[in-house]
Amino acid sequence: MKVYINGKFYEKKDAKISVFDHGFLYGDGVFEGIRSYNRLAFKLKEHIDRLFESAHSICLEIPLTKVQLLEAVCDTLRVNKLDNAYVRLIISRGEGDLGLDPRKCKGNASVVIITDRIALYPEKLYKEGMEIITVPTIRNLPEALNPQIKSLNYLNNILAKIEAINCGYEEAIMLDSLGYVAECSGDNIFIVKRNELYTPPQCMGTLRGITRDTILEIASKKGIAVHEHVITRHEVYIADECFLTGTAAEVIPVVKVDGRKIGSGSPGSLTLRLISEFRKSTKREGIRY
Ligand code: PXG
Image 1 (cartoon, rainbow, N blue to C red):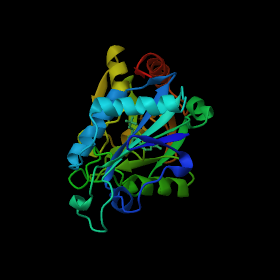
Image 2: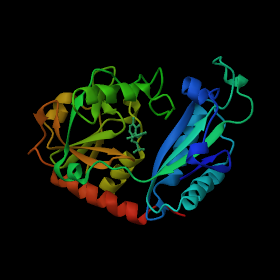
Image 3: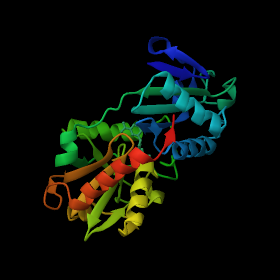
Image 4: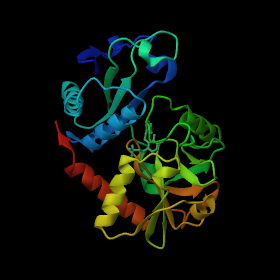
């Protein structure tokens, strides 16, 4: 597997970044997780737009244009001869000194593109649904570190993941500072009640997920009502269906939350329909490479 670093390809063992890079020292940088299906990079433009927004928000100048970055992602996929892949696109502040001051980072930000084979949850979980729990760590306050910024500092999410794993679960519901359901450690959350969809609004400490947006798009095309509305844990417990969305997990049903069975206790019919529609869209949409 070859890794792209600042315009050059390196073998995995030689793909290295300085320990003085502020991405390593402080998590000072931004990233995206992208997938490709049958040589179509799914929603690549949307991921690159979000990356530029994250970078702009932290005053980080990406040393490539959007078109150049899109080409670099496609080149990396081609060089690695990957038809189906997971892509990690990382922009870090670059090499500086041991202080916080980003002005000390001489030269450009570092651009890294790593590709890998797709790591999915086992297919069984998509058929039978997963069990998740609410964890004590709340999502970052938007006023402090806005979850819209996909920064390299993911400790907030990692703490939630650790708390879920310590309790024997793979994914965690994170609440916002008011106690409403925000999202999961690496996924957005949806519930279904009376055949209508509900998902927390993005202003409440929730990342505007690209998979979430794809589900909203599919729902509107199919005439399914969607409410971007605050959700309480109680509303999750009494929902007819629940599912999570994310580039890594795609769309995955949830059948138990905090020990409460959701709906019938197996993946709901609307969830299964949306999984099927989502998979169809990954087959026809994207940037060909
Ligand atoms: N919320 C958070 C906090 C995320 O990190 C999503 C929602 C879903 O967004 P997209 O745009 O992918 O639909 C994410 C996704 C992982 C992993 O291993 C997930 C993400 C980043 C890194 C790793 O599951 N982000």
